[in-house]
Length: 455
Image (cartoon, rainbow, N blue to C red; front, side, top):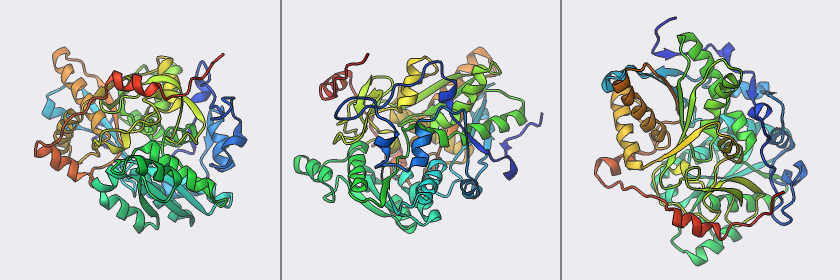
């Protein structure tokens, strides 16, 4: 096989279908519940928020779902995305390991988020929706949705978590360039936002608060729907273009991964990378170890409880069984803004309980140390979110020096850090501090989580 550093695919090799891992799980995931009755809900309960095309994907058990041609045409603006072998990093670490990273920073918005923003905009436009509302943490999802709605002629309104809105003003500028309205959350524009501000005038915000605001705005207008950038099944489904492409690219090298590592907040980037490889593992064609890495300040998998909880602060969303830190969780203002959601994807939470992957939490100073090493060797400045996966990948590669193992490590560099230089300045000036979310804080939050009697 060719010994390549950059592995590319032809446009003709762009995936034609998304892969739905639900079809291959030994046990189906628990259903969402009505927030009032606590009974399982059907597709009709989601209709006020989402178009039927996405609802059908959310509840589907089909193994493959065809990607509409109109979506593939927009994907072709940047996909297939490149896979790189990090040779400079390998030499710097003096490791026998091979490190590959799938680079999603080539998208117009600079991250993996357009992989789902584009189909969400498409399905909404196809059903006559005029406007989408959403929340955003780091600004990557808001940027992606603003880009996608511009492609299909939809309006877009974004509530950006206040801490991120302040830290990353140019993310909001980018959204406005694509035609979106952007608000700092909590805001005075919604009842949910006003309630938070009345109690906490200086609230840094949270994704849970911003979701409440976006959902409230969507439900107040019959021509408006809501869009979510992670967590839900259809979002994870759309991201599988990452892993499907990576499978084809690694086949060109003759390598198969021994370790797949990804950062996790809501879980879409991680799922998009490893779901297709898990399919191959189920079929006995490879046997990678799979690792999710999350911030110590927002450790939903490693410290959160697996139980039903709301997806938002105000309790407007269905109850979902997931690893949660409590729906009223307000994170410390760490710089990995996209990894500060209180709950992990219900599908990933279910798979974690089944033992299909492992998880760990890493402090942000260790992540930025790894990011600097990566940037100085590979040239790409990573977004704060994938630095968690980079830190774990570097640690595993360094361990191979002692064992001599030529381990193949695959990770997803889910975005660049060009809008995150304040975070790098804080690290380089010694001002970045670590935050650890304690088990005592989790236990306190669980007192405010609904108690659901399960059969």
